[in-house]
Length: 236
Figure (cartoon, rainbow, N blue to C red):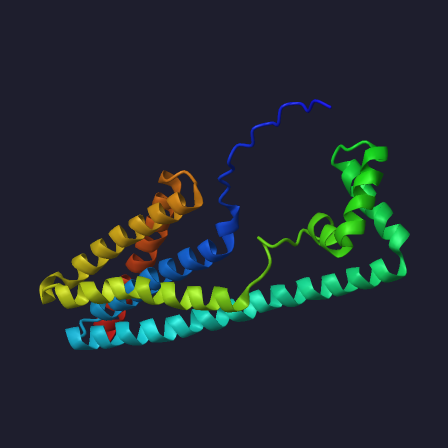
C-alpha cells in the first residue's frame, strides 16, 4: 500500500521556556545595579568619605543578595505549594469522579473550538495516557515550562544581584574622588541599558522599550536617593 508524502517538520524556536530563570535573572541584576548605585550615591550625597561609601556599597551587596534569595525562595515556594495543593485535589477528583473529570476536559476543548465528538475522543485518549498531566496542563495551566522552582529562582536572583551590584562598586574603585558621583551614576545607567538590551534579546523581545524602561526607573531611583543624601548631609 502506497504511503503519502511525509510532511516536512520545521524547527520551532520559541523562547517561553526561558521565562522562569530570565525573570529572576533580570530582576536580580536590575535590583543589584539600582539599589547599590542608589545607596552609593545617597551616601556620597551626604559628603561621606570614599572608604565609607565603598563600605556601604559592599554591605548593600551582601544584604541585597541575601534578601533577594530569601524573597524569591519564599514567594516561589508559595507558588509551588499552591500548585501541589491543586494537583493533589485534582488527583483525588480523578480517583473519585473520573467520568465528571473527563467531561470537564471535554468541555475545555469544546470551548477552544474543537467539535464535541472530537473533543470527547481527545479527552478520552489523553485521560488514558496521563489524566493528571492533561488536567494540570489544560485545566490548571501548570506545565513543565511554568512549574515553580524555588531553589533555582533563589540562586539565580542572589547570583545576578551580586553581579549587578558589583558594577557600581567597581565604578567607585575606579573613579577619582571628585568624579565619583557622575561616574557611578553614568556608568550604572549604561549598565542598566546593557542589561535591558540583554534581557530583551535573550527573551526575543523588542529592544527599545526595555532599555528605556530600565534606565528611566534607575535614573529616578538614583536621583531621589542622592537628593535625600544631600538634604540629610546638609542638615547634619
